[in-house]
Length: 449
Image 1 (tube, rainbow, N blue to C red):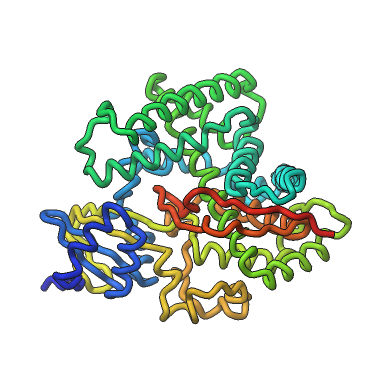
Image 2 (cartoon, helix red, strand yellow; image 1 turned 30 degrees about the horizontal axis):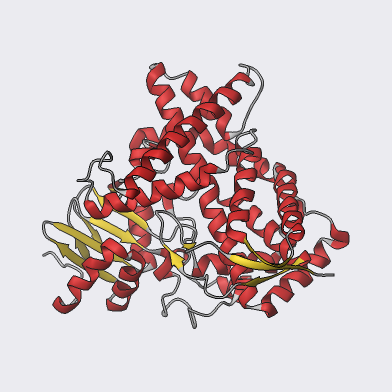
């Protein structure tokens, strides 16, 4: 006998469907208030929303092969193609095997110097702009994350390619547009979103071709290059069909550029905003950073575990504003999740944002409390109650590098600077992957002794 999750009250259904088009975050909040498992009928389509750790574990890990990428990510294939973020099956497994060695713990630790140098450069840039005029800190940390990406995963300078971040904003807007319009509007139709998307696609294609040509020219067959970009190039060269190999290389590089900077920039933006709102927490981070990084020195790999409270602050920021806030899937075959029947072809949503705020899992869940991640408080928490980097086979391959970057930047900025939020610029935007501040993050900067 089929048991379906409850649906929203009839009076609430129009509002939920409207929010699916214009405010998915609001829709997920509303669904979470209804039940931990909700089923929404959209004509012939079914949408299932699951908001419990054991449900998430089943969809993302235990039966992950049955759940392919879904709403939002499907539409992004117009630019990302079959990159690691959107590909499935054997192609995805080959791509993951290609880049995985570039993210081994030892190699990530060896990149600590580059991450620290870029973090220190950000602090000096902000220090140089101290004063009453606001600085868009989100824009600056996005530049930082692109710099780290180029040095650690590509052996390539991304200086002069500042347009990458803006191009990806247009790409994500188009993905949202395609989701709402169900992909029925051709990209040549001259809507503003579509014009920006076409320009962004041209910019990304040009940038990717330049980067591939430059990196390829600096590689030899025996140079031992082990960064992610080099591994992608070698895999493309070994592909039996050169044209397919070139296409996949372009798509994988676009995905690396997006996933390699977007989520970390978002995490840093929210972390710095939360510290500005909670100066007592910032003072504790500053105290730890000054003790561990005495004499104004930059951090190294050995310092990462010593910056334990700073790590807890970043973890709590990712609880409230997870770098991957929603995990959309499509059920390939009928299944059962927590005793509820899921029909084949249905859209399935697991939302870290709402699960990270579930009142049965977290005390006073809306409160910013880094102490939640003290080891003594973590031990009895369900494993899948906290999934800021996703879970299962498609767990974010770059999570360790992203955490190092976020902790180093948070420690150095807190040690050396006071950041204050310009009022009225703290809204939440909802691009494809992460939760960003609407209108950037204008802050005033003041050096501290």
